[in-house]
Image (cartoon, rainbow, N blue to C red; front, side, top):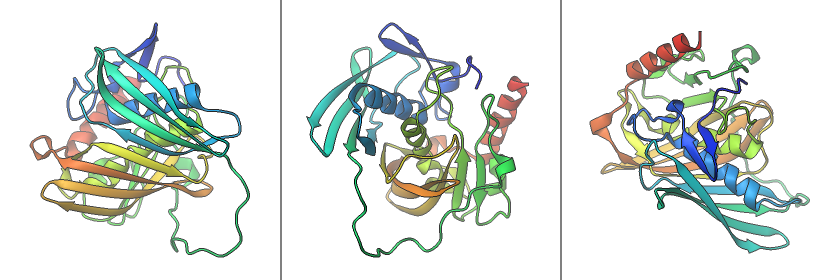
Length: 280
């Protein structure tokens, strides 16, 4: 991974967003995966403890974080023998812009008994279609209405189930993502795979809840939409997270209508094409 590529530059006790951190909703707004990654990274580094693994992360994206320096604070809520809880807040000019809570659990043995599981498991793309390891690459997309995976969103602007396969941008340039931070950043794509219609994306998510039975294996993570519910401009979306070893978690988001800034697949096609040209 190129050391020059990442969402934030650490500066003293804070983080300055790089241009790549800008959202498609607004050029002055930090994109959701960057905030999720920043919060997950801080919680894991400040409040993680040997013998525990992060099992649940909830991020509230309640205020647009602008493209200005940020700070992150974390607090231990409870340190127990089997359960450990912590909170984190992203501050912009001293004002909270996003917050997160994490539950760390101590692994143990599986109990006996057979339990119902989802019959059909998500299928990753062929290995040769993985994102390139040396820099930014657009996610791969798949939909029931398209026979193949591709990086061109307009191939999948339809009303069928969506899937994504991605390698998130590093939070800090030159710093490898931990499996937990990788999952947190990929999970934010739940809004995309569950709210993408045949006319583009007209909902913006206000949160993310990620529940993990294990950490992802490898640098790439996939999401497959499980459900979309919406009424009066309020939406709920659920997705399954998977890697090349199978499903490992679930993600849930709520979202609010943002139809005045509807993002179409043709717009995303142009963004991806421009990014590819800059990378050459």
